[in-house]
Length: 608
Image (cartoon, rainbow, N blue to C red):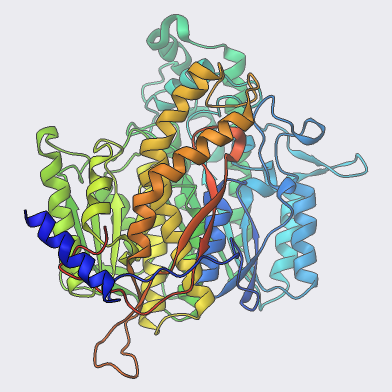
């Protein structure tokens, strides 16, 4: 009866013109900002977190992101139609592209070193060659090529340059360069074994390379791993190749740090991410300690370089921190609240720190101080400490979200449940909360990456709001990055992807990890993706269209309130694609209608 009464009231409201007003989406799917500050960007690779979502974030902050042609930074898995058999980016061509940006007056740069020395993240895990082939067939030492590029950029004191680097994960990529799942499991097991802790004069490159093979008490780790793996252990030659790639990668990272330590690089920033790790004292342990000792600080002790968990969020962090530095950000207070009871543990098998430590590191990176009465609320759903209390955990979070909404405080929401809440949590959020009010949401990838992604977007948005908001192009780009994150996590990750995994295996007789091994009917798969996403996203799109967007934390001219809101317009999704031709993730085009006056909230039920 209560539902019927509420439905009747809502119908009356809609008939009197007080309900949500949908504006028609317009044909501007990606880049809209043609007047922003020019920012030259060499991506880690061509996945959405390194391309389209970086575009959205940058444009929401007033930058105009410029990138080289996709083929120059793209990754192809085995058997995919790569040009001339090349599976990775082209470091030499990318260096020439950066130099062209410098010649034409650009003075803002974000450059992925893994792309510039190896052709992308995946290839950096297996590359053992130290020389780069030039168009005329000659070869140049990759380290020298990078040094020449950075010296050129350092020659212009007006340049601001962010360099993105990584600590290599424990194992190479399955389905790339002939790598198999057996190779991955074998090398990861070897990499996860404890190493001797190197300190003081013993913490050298030679010492680290030696520690790859020996345990704390000089145990032969190859033999130890073989005892653990039994018949599934891989070949010694495969292991040797991976260790050579690790040596090469660390040597390049060391060379960059030594170069930046010289005078003239004060306007450079180095941000190093720790790729998939392990809670054990693994092969990364001494590499991390070595790179930490090379991080620079300025004369006042303020960091110039950072080393944090997460790699696929590096560009987000760099864009956000670049913006904060340019507006002379003085930091902010945030309230961080956990729901689920597992915040003092690693949030997934690929983290080496408890979730609270990862959050604390990112707070320090963005000059955030934790406090109860804060400028922004950060709500984190952890893995459930008690499986029987899952609903109680996320309902508590939702009550906190609603309280923040009523108080007009910006909210960053992090789903660190690692999939253990299924679709129930997302379904409840869609039915009972205003998703479009959030300033940031993340939950799709590994938890270290999720944390960095959420904080990057949330803090950047907070800074814009505190400055009175952005222009229409900036606001539209912000709305797109929020919609992108929510829809991919709520709709694709937990609903459509599961259907596609079964469809590819059972109906198309293929592999969801690579649609070309064996080759499957891509047209049929694309059709299945489109129909699945249209159905799964309908309620989320409806929620966003009826949400209000927080656009300023300064009062408007005609209001005594200390905030300003606008209504979301129409939202339409088109052009679904599979980056890397695998089912792991999708990309899509997002079309938005014009913003409207704030939507009316009647008895809290207009969302649905």
